[in-house]
Length: 66
Length: 470
Image (cartoon, rainbow over all chains, first blue to last red; front, side, top):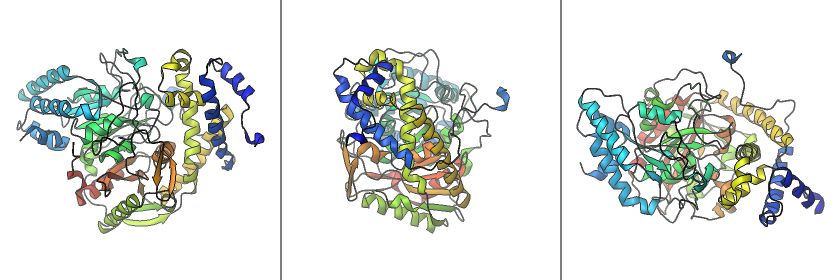
């Protein structure tokens, strides 16, 4: 269904240009369905109840660094 | 002792002989170089072979030992490093021709510590380009081949490390593990692979894939050798911002053979996932063997396990794309196409999704830590299948056909999310003669318990005595 597509082609091309990719390259025709598939799988995150938990980020300064 | 036998001795056995001057590092290195010469046309484990440098280092080691300056158990032991560990004066390609001529000025911390311990670097090992894939494919330097059947994958991304160790080309190798890249080739090649706790072994001087999930780890043929390697490489490094300030024990003290009373949890979700029946049977048999040794097993539930792929996949794609963004813009068309697609797709992950994945990681880790309040270790298969054919896009796991990448990382990714130590140890062979791996994971910085259980199991079985037919 078109409504299930997380990224339409125009938005994809805009973001690809912003990211520094060559939007005239025929490679983009291969990349677009791959990106759509990846972004669809990322939506599995929506099934996780994260509550008020903060992101688990790795770079926490040690006391010695302060 | 003939040369082939020398190549299949463990570091523990070799070091005792070297220390007693029963064998010289020169003989050991010559035997391994001959073994590489006989087998590497088939296996393709090496990107760069350092024959002359290794021979010179072996002569120096021999002189030092003769003069009474024995440095310790790795003195004179032949090692190999995955080709994303920077080595001063020796090219480091990260598995891509783009870096065919990149020669770092300095050693990474792991290489420096091996060198200081007197280990002898035989060469730089083949890998999935930029460590971004679990199979051991490489179009630039040639695919890696499994020593048990060269038509099959080694697993990756540290595939050359897996094949070199399994085939007796090196005694100890190093891999790096972001989604399973030490444990996957260890399981598929029939060796031991440890992903230490995040922050315990320095990442300094390694090409990153995901800053917050990269773990360097040793790959060996015995658990004792893993302990010996950890004694050299573990410990704080001020050059690595994520390096932990923790006390480093003597890891060989874990090798007691005693697991009486050890509490081992069996997450029921591991056996509700797609799983080859031969793998399931081998792992169940290993669990029974640990029970016979006195371990107490109990079924536990790990519901967040089902979300591991979404959490780790999102974090990994975003971080890999961030690190390689300039490379993509400059040399994207020179990258191995599947790696290029993965890297470019990461550019489209939003900041909100990345942070949602990190929030979910917090929930995942909370649940995983609670589990390890109830038990000392978690146990399960390392891989749902034995080694599939090279370039197979899908694999059969039980009654399901699933994508190869998803299958190979299914049981390994959870411990990259949590950062817990996890080891793969051989636990049997399929009817086709292919190795099967058992995975044990423990609490953060409790490598001693992980090694204790893996060693007790290893000593109670005889899987380590089998050699690949090559």
